[in-house]
Image (cartoon, rainbow, N blue to C red):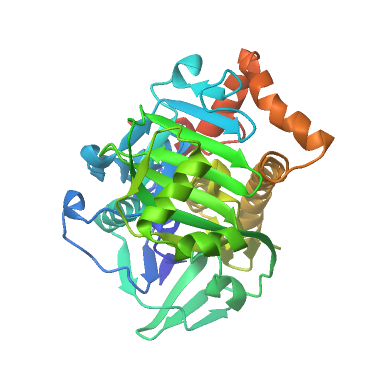
Length: 410
């Protein structure tokens, strides 16, 4: 029997698995199995993997969590892209005007504001760290869940895995969440996110760019190759029209939407898309079950906080579970899991509410309150203390942080 079985081998699930298998703060690592349909060992060097269109923006807190999990050191340095600046503006002003809100890492004494990392590289590095720590990867999909007083049994086509705790990290539609009877509240934003890699006429200058428009939000994220990853959260009807365009016609629409902030653009990858929904599990935990990442919550991507919130879930849960085992307590005890739920639910709710307000007022807002919020972007430029507050929050340097997010491993 394992101490923990994790269902879902994406970056968040793999991170939780690695943290639990490695141990921390003098607490020994646990016996951990990870179940995922595609979680097979892969000896392909990370630097040789094809470029992934899907990228994530990692905060300083996430960087520290990944270092603690053993995944950061495995990422190929030449594929990492730090960004030092961020420029945010509303469609009512020019991207070159003084009304553009600017954030600079130097304002808070940090070397950068975060890192843009390919999703596939992040996942593979964490899975490798997990296996090196003694974790067991098993390929398969969840078929059934059986919860008993002293253990939980996870069934797949390959057989059954028994543990004292099962962690659901299997995404927004989470089969484990459903099998455990943990409901979720879902609300559609009426938007679709389009992601792609583009070349731009002007260099990105290690800067993340974001424009709020009446029909959505457009972000340019700087990549190590000098290209940029776009995340265009457009109203559903507009997104459907954009996805039907030729590459050249799409680039023309992208130029219009970006107001040529980086000059003319050219697609250098396929376009991918996914519908945007807000999801909140009604409970993060149940008897011998805990949810992390998208299985527990999904937020709008405009602030790039989805994976960061999930990695903090992983670190918080691992910290509490490892501490419980060190005290010779049951890692699946409901008291341990409820402490995790109280901790993370409040942090996630605060961030989700702020993100929804940005979308409602800055991108889609109309009327006096929205107009005031849109003008507030330029007002913040003259308030350095407030700007530093927002930077520190985005970096994950404030709030109730897990130990792994606050300390660099020795």
